[in-house]
Image (tube, rainbow, N blue to C red):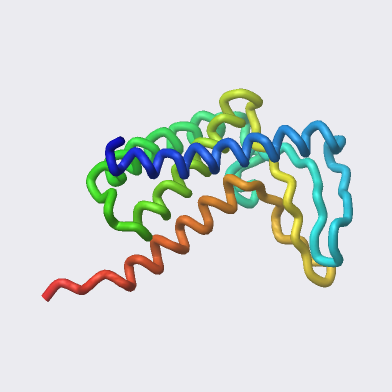
Length: 156
């Protein structure tokens, strides 16, 4: 197996877990219903036609094509970078998490026309916008990319 291809397994695992969790929550909860899990966390089924934090969710529908195009472009760039730098562990892990998350949400947009969100964290009545496994993978990947950028030696 090519060394960069192992990172595709990480992306595939993110996609599989994301799609499984969205299917499970979609079957278990009616739209908008909240189920308290902890004093700071609910499960809630939300159909998000926008981007992160429901950005542009009230637009006329063109945002679906825009966000799908961004995800496809990001996937192409990430695949190129994974092939070019397969030995950089932190960098490649970050990219594979972002790739899996982007493709997980792209599958929803293509199949359903919206993204399923269901993780609702809150504190003292303030609710963080609901998100999903794909969003969490993208966020962790972005944090790892930032962390990795501080570890690299600076050019002199």
